[in-house]
Length: 214
Image 1 (tube, helix red, strand yellow):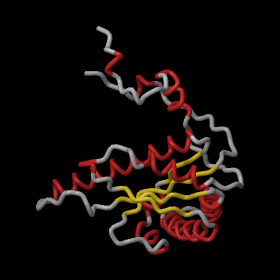
Image 2 (spheres, one colour):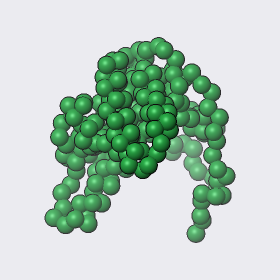
Image 3 (cartoon, rainbow, N blue to C red):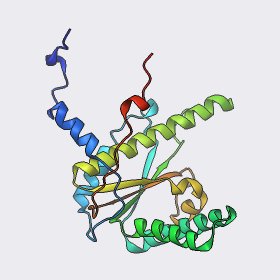
Image 4 (spheres, helix red, strand yellow):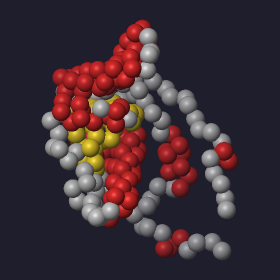
């Protein structure tokens, strides 16, 4: 039986095939052109990120925007210091550490804008037991991740490239300190945005390797 097309959301005008091509065309971009993002474009991207699904509709995401050379440099140096310490603790040689730090720093400082994606539990439910409270935190993490995906897709629609980096998870206190974040902000990742300076090519594994039908 075919679905009743008249019952579809009238606000959706993009043909399904075009939407699927758009979704499959998004890739992580790590190299950017040396030009800024118009403020109107950035605000449209952030507004679309806000329309992601969220647990209880509490919208636990918070976006911290870094669009100056100094703020991007400070964050890059802060995270680089933690990365270097972690790699040394792992016994990695200094040449490899230097290369990893240089690559990470370049991705951050060369982006037109960095969006530090945070969550807050401020408006989430509270439970007296640890099990349910842990589940509530995971729900907030999932909500913030979906907002990040919306942000990346909106950036893609605007002709921007972007990449999500999880480095703040490894040094949340340092990130919170260098950016002077409110104490309830939990850094989850940083999204680098800019106009692409590379052609990504990496695809995906075959669908059947990632799906189970029951």
